[in-house]
Amino acid sequence: MKLYFAPGACSLADHIAMHEAGIAFEPVKVDTRKHVTESGADFMAVNPKGYVPVLEFDDGQRLTENIAILSWTAQQSPALAPKDEMARLRLLESLAFISTELHKQFKPLFMPTSTPDEKARQSDLIAKRLEFVAGQMTDDYLSGPNVSVADAYLFVMLRWSKALGVKIPDKLVAYMDRMAERPAVKTALQHEGLS
Ligand SMILES: N[C@@H](CCC(=O)N[C@@H](CS)C(=O)NCC(=O)O)C(=O)O
Image (tube, rainbow, N blue to C red; front, side):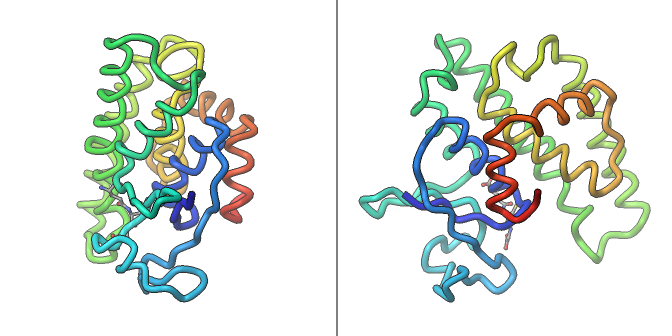
């Protein structure tokens, strides 16, 4: 099994989650600007959408989209798998929120064409959403005392927030430190050359 990733990109969430689940896989580094893998292969042939993450199964099938890959990963591990139907829906709810209301909102912050005003407005929007997440969190992790694949995704959003100067609520700063101590997070960061 292969996970196509770009260092520090959203694919870091899948990378962390795969380690949390204890799944053996080969990480394949991708240059998402040039659309080539580390070995020089054409990444557009792997994912015509041109972006990471991609999970490639041993039979050659490929799964894209963070929500799908993280959901699959959760299903593989009893520790990460939600216990009942409502918990599964709550996990999906968290993943959808992180994907659409956080992840996609960073785009203007990464675009060189965005004006300082646009970037400031977008930073404020993301900061408000992080406040909302902090308000909802009543335990060590997003969905309670145990880590889930959604935590891996949120951790990446917090890394980006920190790097881009988006205000992070104190509760999430402590949460980020807690996540950073997890062996799966350390291993994924190390593999991506980020530790
Ligand atoms: N909808 C996709 C978006 C993935 C995405 O935005 N990937 C970024 C890295 S965080 C990327 O590879 N961008 C390169 C490109 O679009 O060319 C998902 O959630 O998996």
